[in-house]
Every structure is written in C-alpha cells, then in structure tokens.
Image 1 (cartoon, helix red, strand yellow):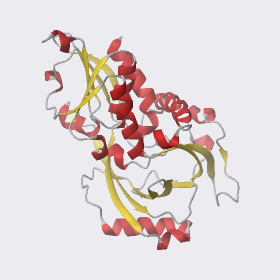
Image 2 (cartoon, rainbow, N blue to C red; image 1 turned 180 degrees about the vertical axis):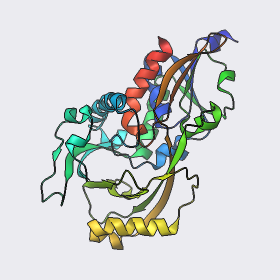
Image 3 (cartoon, rainbow, N blue to C red; image 1 turned 90 degrees about the vertical axis):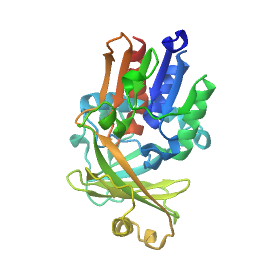
Image 4 (cartoon, rainbow, N blue to C red; image 1 turned 30 degrees about the horizontal axis):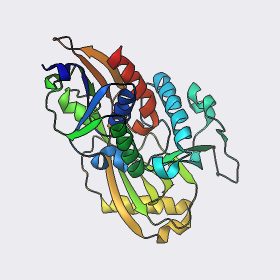
Length: 316
C-alpha cells in the first residue's frame, strides 16, 4: 500500500449519506475521495421527496438524535434556498399525533396538533425542511470538492480491497450484495411529478401497515405526489396504474391536482434494514472500515447526524 493511500479516506457511495459524510470528513481536514458507481443524480437520493421526517428507519432512540442534529443544519441551510435547495415549508402530517412519536418530537420547534381548519382528523402541523434533492446533491458535491475532495465513478466489488487507510461504506441498498448483508431490503417508492396548480403547503397521510400513502410536496420543479411503500419490490419501471391511483388520492385532498399536467414519473428503492448500521470494523490488516447504511426512507432526514458519527468512528 502506498503512503498516499495510507493517509486517505475513501467513501464508497455517492447518495446523500455518502456525500454528506464525505463533506464532514473533508472539512475536518481529511484527504477524502468518493468512489461512486453512478453520479448523485442517478441515486435513490435524487428521486426522494425531500421532506425532513423520520420515516421507515430504526432504531428510534438513535434516529431521533441523528434527525435533530440534521434538522439544525437544514434550518441554517434554509437561509440560502436557491443555493442549497433547502426551504422551510409549512404542512400537516395527517393521522399523526404527538403521543405516538418518540421523545425527539418534543424538540421540533413549533410542532403542534393541527387545527380543524388545517386538517379534518388527527394531524400535526409543522414547518419543516423541504429539500429539492437535485439542487442539494449538486451543492453537497460542490462543497465537498471545495474542501479538497474528489469524486470518481468507480464500481466496488470488495470493500476490503479498497486501497485506503479508512473506508466508509455508504452504499445503501448496494450493501446487500457488497457486505454482503441480506437484512438490507428494498422498499419501492413511486412518485408522480405534476405542474403545481398553486399548492404551497405539504401534506402527508401515511399508512405504515400498507403499501400506499397519500402526500404532496411543493418543490421548485413541480408538485411531487406520492406514494408507495412496496416491500421487497425491485422494479424501477413506473407502473401506470399505480401512478393513476397516486394522482387520484392526492386529488381527493386537493381537487385542482386532478387536472395538473404530468411532468415526470419517478421510482426509488429505499434501503431498509431492521436498524441502521453505523459502526466501525477493524480489518485483518489493521485498516478501518466504517459502515453507514440502512437508512430506509430517511436518509436525508438523518444525513448530517449519521455523517458526524461516521466521521468520529473513522478518525477515532
């Protein structure tokens, strides 16, 4: 192994978790490179709705701290929305109550029960980060490069063969084969993007026991409509019948959505796991391998908290 690689950190994976982790490491003074199989705009992160909220991620006692740490960062980034892609937007989580959430919820400023005018039924009103992932992933990459980092398109087939002092595994669903870790499973999410007919607030209504949910998120490029949560489904091809049902469910809440022109169909596979794997492994030759994957539907939500923990594990 060369002296150069001996002092280097390589982050494997270029989605939001990999990019954020690489930013934290590079800004801490490390010599960092990202090895990614595909550019950020083709990762699962790129098709995410982008609303900050812990969703399909465990364990809650750790997730809450990671999510709150990330929330604080996004609140700062929201002062430059055009640059960072982060805005603070009002909305309602339907069929959700404070007493059904973990202790973290009491520390989210302004989170309260929705009024009858805001939501018919039990719901929570909040002003939360809504992140335009196209802009945000580009901004993260530029911030990483500005800190001295480099991004390379490379396919990794063996983590232990990556020639660096520290390797950080942020491969998401790819960890299923790469580690290998069969506990990582896909939860398929399908979205429809339409021209926004004037919707300025977000709304969610999620049935955690079912495969369908109803939500809409106003982003600069259009109104994102969702969604699905199909366990162990691998298809990246949009299903026209599912898309039709998504539009119909959202239009039942906001009738003006029914006539909106469809801009795009999106499909992403959330990398779910019984619990996020965020831990340090010492390889037989003494090098360090840090795992940071299994973030389910909340990679954006916990990205900064997990990145800082991964950086501590990498350098500690």
